[in-house]
Image 1: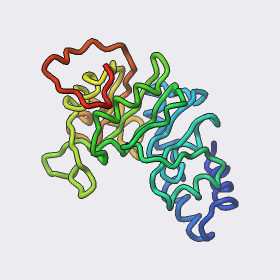
Image 2 (image 1 turned 135 degrees about the horizontal axis):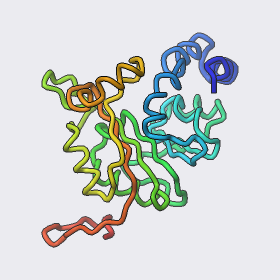
Image 3 (image 1 turned 90 degrees about the horizontal axis):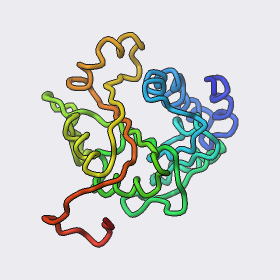
Image 4 (image 1 turned 45 degrees about the vertical axis):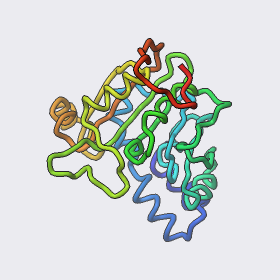
Length: 227
């Protein structure tokens, strides 16, 4: 969807004041597809897929996805706005559970995993609602020697190796990784891709659900875990 189409929807349907609707558009929606174009193409994102957008916020990702796609948001102040745009939003805290009656081709989870108390459980629950060979997109800030990853609301920190290990130990096959910086030109991301994945500001991962064969003999599994 083009910028002008998105702007028209927000200004006409948004639940905030006209001034606030415009601010939200300029801050979150304007040029969003262009900012993400590099990662969309690198990860071969199919917009015809049924996508679950976790932590959908104002809906700036979801508004570009297939109409069957669903957003999950726990912040009650954002939900009326994104629903007013015609988006399908579930009010849900995914730390408790994910929607058990839906199956998705792709789960889109950006700027989110480090905010969770239980990232392993979250990734485990995601597997249950992905279709066979369903895929997962994760994006988080990388650990930094300058501590730029630190925040009062970031409970975990990962480097590339530790994040991939967590995904692999949860039953995912790593397909592609990226250090994409959204607002940088495509050529910058192409040239510096290997370096950005180690020393950049964030890491992107595309992973695919697969069968697991883990050894749990030395583990004392919680009741929610079903091998």
